[in-house]
Amino acid sequence: MDPAGSLRSRGLAAFEGLERVFDAAFGSALNPLRHLGALGFLCFWLLAVSGIYLYAALDTSVGGAWRSVDELSREQRYLGGLLRSVHRYAADAFVIVTLAHLVRELLLGRYAGFRRFSWLTGVPLPLFVFACGIGGFWLNWDQLGQFSALATAEFLDWLPFFASPLTRNFLDAASVSDRLFSLFVFVHLGVPLLLLFGLWFHIQRIARADVFPPRALAIGTLGALLAVALAAPVMSQAPADLSIMPGPLALDWFLLFAHPLAYATSPGLVWALFCATLLFLLALPFLPRPAPPAVAKVDPDNCNGCRRCFEDCPYAAITMGPHPNGKAGRQLARVDADLCASCGICVGSCPSSTPFRSGARLLTGIDMPQLPIDALRRRLEEGLAALRGERRIVVIGCDHCAPVDRLAGGDVTTLSLICTGMLPPSFVEYALRGGASGVLVTGCEEGACAYRLGTRWTKERLDGAREPHLRASVPRERLATAWLPAGDDRALAAALDEFRRGHG
Image (tube, rainbow, N blue to C red; front, side):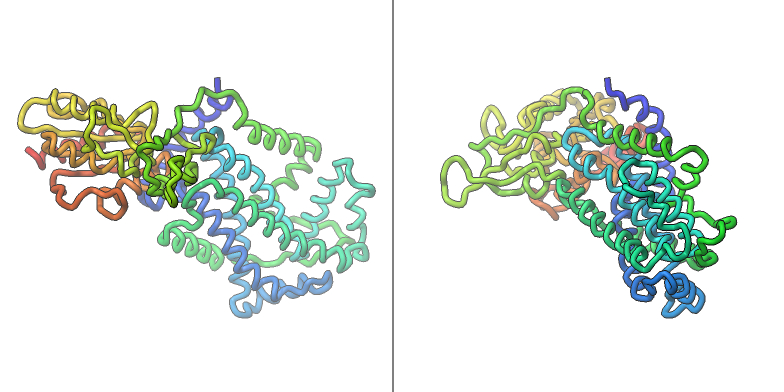
């Protein structure tokens, strides 16, 4: 039994409902919840660009830091105050999208198997995000920065690692020297470099990772940040003064929530919560789970080394190596079982997956043992042979979208694939030549594919923009596509009715 299953079952339904609301508002292709990772990268680069300018204008001394930042905000030199506000709100947005991305992947169960590497390299990244953000308040060196620096020192002092308490650096004004302030600068500038390396490492085993959201979503996000910055500009609070206790402070609850939490409870409890959460998240990929499905299998006798499966694999599970036949320049695809998602997209990319090949058994260069391409051809032939009447419709769908098998019967036969991206385009032509009056291909909405690229590659192959492509001689009026929300039986039935009316 999956120990995290109870957590996912309670939260997944609510999250999917929220996604549907966002789908209705933005469309599935521009739904921010489907691009949380890419939005995180966008926030990082906004912080980097705005931060470079702010650092150039910052007086990196204890006596001049507050004055330089305050003047920048009040005098708006070259819109410096606006950039400062965008910098702060982008940091808040970075925290929000990073944590939302982690929660979404957790609820969807995307932390084990072929996703283990991405999960384990992603879980520590929020720590760097918070370290960068908290360190930024210290550089301003107003009373909020003073409070945060002292609270952080007290929090770290709870650990038995330091020879002398860090809070001794904040006993009086003389204790905070330019040397200590240089350490603040190092934290705020050095940690983002570690974060950038961590982000790069995080996406190494994801082919064609979305490191930038769709243009419309990126522009909308930037516009929202600018609107908030103009409506509620960020201003410095009173300058830091270690001789007095700071009064009421306007706290940034997204980045600094740990400080009041530690004061309201205890540093020990906060450390315990933090360590327990981190250990739980890191342990998830190693907990007992059902046996994974069979991975893709390469047939050397039918693999010609064309590299299409290598280029189309969403998780970089396929590499190319020398072919065992020893021919110069001939390559063979190789599947890394630890990275293979068992999605079958590679099967749809293989030119030898065409059902028009002769032979009692259809063999292809790469295949899924649990759903061989030969079995799909036989199911299609048997399904067409079982239909009677002039109108015979083939519906080809995906196990992760609306279930197509419920439509079988009458004038409809169905094929359900692991992912629609498993579909070789030649199967459409084969069905039409085999007596089908029309073929309806359905799958996940754009941006919602369970295997990231299945919908995209299928559309491009059917449109002739990607190899292997559907031949131009195939009558397009006899083919329709429907990209639908997962489990939406009603939308699938409506798409079939519309297609049926066009072929009545």
